[in-house]
Amino acid sequence: MADLSSFPITKKWPAKDPSVIQLYSLPTPNGVKVSIALEELGLPYEAHLVSFGTNEQKSPEFVSLNPNGRIPAIIDPNGPDGKPIGVFESGAILIYLAEKTGKLLPRDAAGRYSVLQWLMFQMGGVGPMFGQFGHFYKYAADKVANNPYPMERYRDEARRLLGVLEGELATRPWMAGDEYTIADIATFPWVRGLKVGYEAADVIGLENYPKVMEWVARAENRPASQKGLNVPARP
Image 1 (spheres, rainbow, N blue to C red):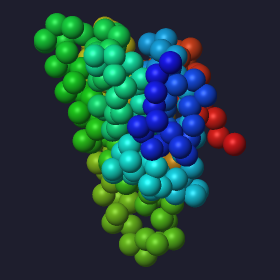
Image 2 (cartoon, rainbow, N blue to C red):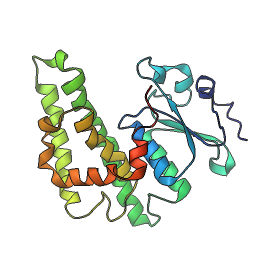
Image 3 (tube, one colour):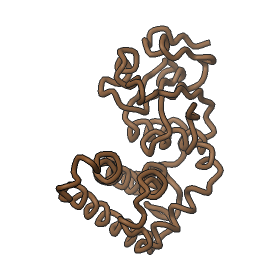
């Protein structure tokens, strides 16, 4: 049985089964990337809900694993050389899990970098821009009621990014080619979130990106996605 006592986070979120991957997360577009990947890869794991309502992501125990105080984060009791390892940042976790299993990331160099560049497209573009749009459109609308610039700026950038995806997905079923990869897992929850989270389908004009929406539907309908999109379960 693995000993995870050296990780202070386990004092606040005790592991019921320390022999499996410990996931600390919330079912947000960033959080579900990892739960979906874990389901796709068939890796046993234990999910711990990190409540934003009580700022648990800022607690000393959580920050001990991720100094940036953001979900998701994991502990793998069977890390490199058989030793436990903690990993934070969703993109890094996806790469780690893909390399651990040899799945969802091509092994040939050209294929690998094709996936990684699209993963970085999500990490550096889709996530931050969609998130800022959602913030100003839904959560801070009252604060910018007399200044439409912030919402419009991020709305227009979200549309531009969707246009990039629309062009690429017109020629292939998945972001990096014929195979479903961690790039798709990282990105589709954010596009889905424009509709189901931010309730902004009309404002963004999602109907103008039919290939993107067909891709979202393909990814969302996968059994692993259906389960992973709701992990950890909200109370």
